[in-house]
Length: 175
Ligand code: HEC
Image (cartoon, rainbow, N blue to C red; front, side):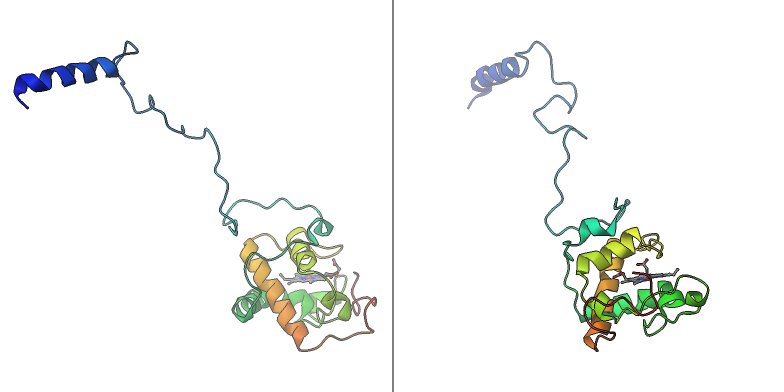
């Protein structure tokens, strides 16, 4: 096409751009989702990495399932967290004989039938919202840390549950 041949399409294009009587002066003036205009949904299976989970009562999450498998890898991570955060009350072997239990409402044996029968969601809820005497363990622990702890408790319980059978209360504890 010759230089004159380009002239007509160019003029038409310029006229089209300016059809609303103004030049597009900024990138905001285009068909696009504007910043903060709408929140995208998190992909399925996402785990919150920051922020605070709002949970007042462990009974509200009894049916909650872990977004990641409660497998041996998770249990191994949970064992490390357990040693740092839970041993003072629940004891090294999770039998409710930690040193704080002598001066505080005694923490239960986590291998008790009563706790073996709890749902994963209830255990997670206890760690997140706290129990009747147990303080919330949410501070400093991510959602995944708490699910790892549930995996650790379940792996201990696989070694065998103790106590007086279903319906009994945790030994020495205040369920
Ligand atoms: C300050 C002492 C204390 C600490 C620290 C503590 N617990 Fe407890 N925990 C208790 C007491 C007391 C109970 C029994 C009464 C209740 O549910 O509040 C309990 C109950 C529980 C239960 C049983 C809930 C039920 O009724 O089925 C689980 C599971 C549990 N704790 C796990 C943990 C884990 C895991 C940690 C560490 C992240 C932890 N606890 C840290 C004192 C403690």
